[in-house]
Length: 303
Ligand code: ATP
Ligand code: ZN
Image (cartoon, rainbow, N blue to C red; front, side, top):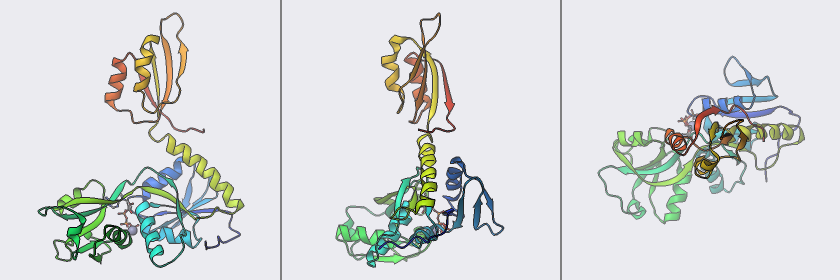
């Protein structure tokens, strides 16, 4: 059964990481949805000024539990933390108490199995009887069970990557983004167990009416902010006959606004592109006949 949401609170409360990789991008994303706050002296609570939406600044590991207990309505946390705690709940027979409401497109990383650089990798079967250090015992155990491998899971809360050198483990299962930390510890990734990014987490059920409306407003703004994250407005001129070659080069573009330029054999185009615009792509557009190409940032969009 889902936990009850405490009644009588008409402000929304969002938990975000206090310090760490997701702290700043989470705040920046919420600020881009028009929120501003007054911070408490102890930096644990931010009172929402522009909207009745407050922030609780906590350790990322606490966020799913705060949602499960109804202390916070929403949270911004790595999908890895959600999945690990969900797995632990499942293993203990508890019902799911939080779910992913939106993927947020930052904090990308993956949970990888890594072994010492000098060792050959053939298959998961070679881990049989070995010790694997991790801070993600539930996700690792689920993967081992799926692969039919019996290995010892060594639980470490930090510095997992030095465990093989300290003789604490034969392999590790840890979060990786660039892979630089693994390489610095003479380890190589061999299997990806789980792909992660920051997510907006919320309860399994909808919120009550007062906060439900606020959540809808927030989600509308959030979806707008996510949609324009990489978006650019392109302005350029072109001859009509260049369009068949030009238009397919525009990355994830909306329908262009096309205007006739008075007294010239040209069209002026205005196109919103959501895909990544590289220098290479801009040069391709110029070669295909785009003239006076201008790329403008998009600050806001309401669908
Ligand atoms: P806290 O003090 O809040 O417990 P932490 O040390 O557990 O912080 P961080 O290292 O700040 O957490 O990582 C927060 C999240 O950032 C991770 O759970 C993960 O989703 C994401 N992340 C992205 N890249 C990496 C990476 N290379 N290593 C670890 N986490 C990463
Ligand atoms: Zn943590």
